[in-house]
Length: 426
Image 1: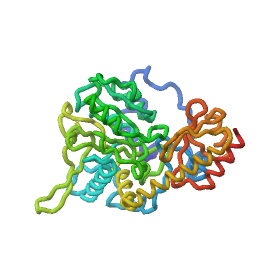
Image 2: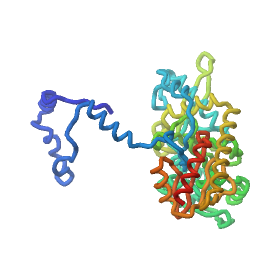
Image 3: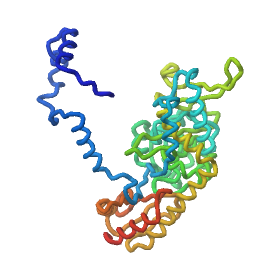
Image 4: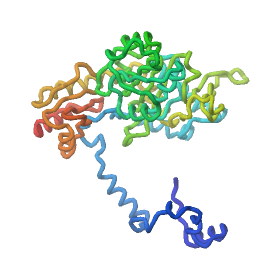
């Protein structure tokens, strides 16, 4: 929102037009208990130049990922975004933050979203994908709600270590959520709508889908697979045997941006499409028989009766889906697989180096680009100590555990600096 300063004369003219003597008169109908008491404790107003300087001081306190060794992942990953991505999404033809409502004047944007859907469907091994979601957490919750509609059941089981942020959103949006391991799920649990499995899980461990598929079939439940790091699909098998695949696509085309905006994705089998939330761009032909794109199967309350709506969630910002699509188009299938291999190789280099540091134990047997290490001292303390040295060590878990990640941005010199710093504090 733009700041529109007003002179005293302009304010008086507006108040005169309204018919009140002061701004306070506009609030006379607000109960006294609800009004703020006293003067807001804010610094005096400054000129534009002074404000810019003050904000620059605050901004310079940030430690950007590129300013030093960086090993933090946990759902938001440091990947390279080609300069051409930013250039293309800022072209006037595309520069909109929303999915279009008027397809007759937005064929280019609809085409790009259709390509986005195609990429997601191919990566996940599913039949169809929507035009995107807010983020991975809301996408996961919508998948659970969709499974409940499909089955008419009310329980949701999380089968492994789901991202804690996803857990928070899931529990706030769905009643009857619980976490169980594979061996503790009973064969007679007939009220289970779906089992949610994250791959790799929050601790970096890849998942074998076959046993979960068999269990869901035995229970009559849907299998929901959550992908938190979409680059992993360049190396790990696509979850084609799942009923619904959802997750986070920030790693392709989008910078971390201090936690957002992110790009949720959602894909499923064709027979479930009418219960899929969000928007869907479909291909058709116009009156002249030419290829055209439209918003189709609109199942949101903006388009149909509220009680018939599958969801009131919006799609993600159109620019986020476009950035993903441009980056994926630049990579191609071969480039995407190569990117995944580089990520895994760098993580392997990191694990090998950390295993040689006294007081460090690598916990994971398998991983993609993220894994857990156990330290000889509390991990939160170590993270703070390394941050003071300009090294972002990872995410401190409970006790002495530390979750670390490596991507194509991780250099051998970063790993050396990390290991050297660890030796000095352990």
